[in-house]
Amino acid sequence: MPQTPPALEPEPISADPPHRTNRTLLTQSWLDLAFLHWPVDPAEVAPLLPAGTVPDTLDGVTYVGLVAFRMHRVGWFRLPGLPYLGSFPETNVRLYSVDGHGRRGVVFRSLDASRLLPVTVGRWAFRIPYVWSKMTVRTDGPTVTYTSRRRWPGPRGAHSAISVDIGERVEEPTALEHFLTARWGMHSSFRGRPLYLPNTHPRWPLHRARLVSCDESLLTAAGLRGPLGEPVSVLYSPGVPVRFSGPPRLPRTVSVPRPRAGGD
Image (cartoon, rainbow, N blue to C red; front, side, top):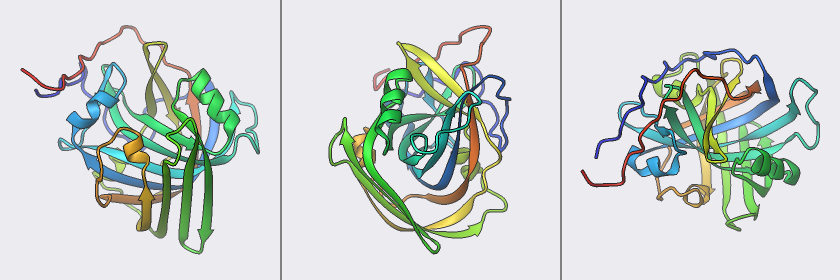
């Protein structure tokens, strides 16, 4: 059965934030990011998305991303970020979504992080699937290597080891590169209700990157069917400062019927 589209047309893909962050909830920086992406069938990932969202697509295809980076100085509201508890390596598995208000975003299937307290707070306070892992980020000349191995809650042994060589600056990102990186919110659910958290940050400084090696089991642990083969997009960014605001107030709720697995 064809997927049911959102009740409103998806907002345009924009390299710059389409909204302002008026009520800052969290501040942080994302540094030394490697973006790896694979194309997937929207029907395959639709059951993995929260209620009220459907897969966001470009030319009929959606994507799964494996994004490794350094989280730096997470802070509440406008307070200074924490230098130790708020700074740690992170690797997330994310999908691409759009809701009934036309807002594009990401859905995190897992977020591996090396600090237990932020993992616990993220899981308890925001119902975000953080996982405590042993992690490293190492730089050797133009090569950046990210490693991760699950500790709690599992599945224990789920891991990733990614190395990329940083290439030239991307002066004019393609439509696909904008689609994969210019994401201005997160879709989730909280106590059974849809949740959207918007973010703002400067335009991504992107670089081409060459994948040196990738040994990972995080995608299958996140519910994706593997193996997916070689990624179709590999990018690197030195990073950006980020602000998250609280859920926006909307005048009305637009429901999005979830696509069924099969049938007429």
